[in-house]
Length: 302
Image (cartoon, rainbow, N blue to C red; front, side):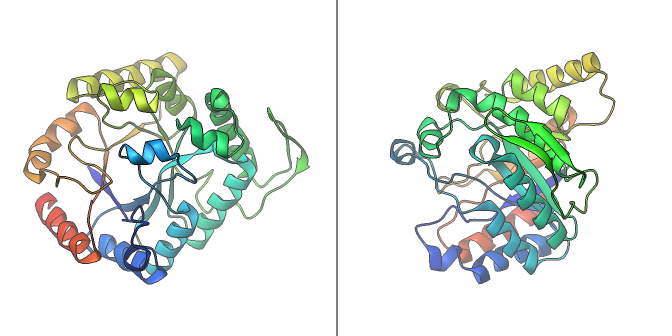
């Protein structure tokens, strides 16, 4: 089992505490020094008020934050969890990813999703009804751009004729792609286009808000992993598929602390189900609390 740990950059209410270059770098170094495998940030460029009022959260630009983390570290992987593909022209995304991968000497893990916040889509001028088609298109377009070869590509809302993007990513053919979402469509996208699948816990209300399937417990997770394996067999995929899951009881915003004893007890069951990575949020009110919880988490998992 490998672990990706959140940087507390969703705390936009305390920018001096969490959002300066020195603060982001300090948190990233602490995650690396604690022995974890990756650090992650999430993505919400301009979330709607109603969602924020009901428990949603802000996010900083993921590429800026992870570039700062890259400069402060040597080994740890830099994980977007999750970058919403339809919000952006895929060639701009491909350029940002390749730049970060070169700057970090090949440490990017690109977690991506189709998104779900209708108000955010509207604010960014994107039709939320096209999100799945745009996500699929973006994956194809980015892979073309990352070859470094001349690209001609007809998109739903753009046309590229004999264009080229350099530099190429350090990782070949591209950084690992982890596809988020609990739906069968998201699973098929991960199997057909990605290197990993990134589901998350979702009860009825959360599943409804995010427009995806519910994963309420390990039984649901096992069933979805089983579907991924069945689809891989159907399409002839033989490469392994990472499964990066946010464990039950963990969250990314301040709230009740996670039950680490329960997590430790559940690790064998996660591994038996096929989970290869766990993405762990660390809700906190200041950096001192972040470091305390991080140290406790590392000691528990060793």
